[in-house]
Image 1 (tube, helix red, strand yellow):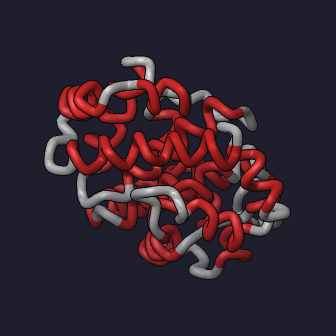
Image 2 (cartoon, rainbow, N blue to C red):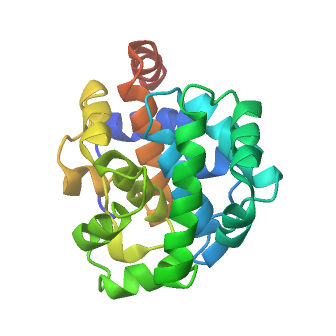
Length: 220
């Protein structure tokens, strides 16, 4: 996507090598432009946007999917208690009851309005990222943070929304001396998949001074 300075390339290589796994991949989601993985990403975005660790959110997503709730119909048809139990197995306990209710209502909304297919939402928004975010925020538990999480991961398979590098991503970039503006930072990536990996890596760095120091040392 563009030329990089020698130091930027060294930072990128170290960053992607150590932290360049998307949260979708960590959750076992084989992301593609298909209804099931797109729904699973929506569930993950909701779990990640709560004030809880990313590790617990990922674990909870895995438990929900393993229990058969990785489709809108599966989530809707599960009992409220079954969803609570799955969240509990992932140690997502502080918000489990409220989250179970929101997951059920969100699945119903997706089925009723979008026929279970988030591609319909994207098409209704004509691929515009701001409109997509607005429509995503109609789902229970998805606010601006959740919409950002969904968009920065889905850009790997929805080229219409790329680049999506939100404030948390740009904050991480600043800690590593990388560009803090969306377009210049995006030019360091070679594909939309790499953009999604870069976003996830920089979110991790934004949360940890130790991680930022580690990357800078490795890039020297």
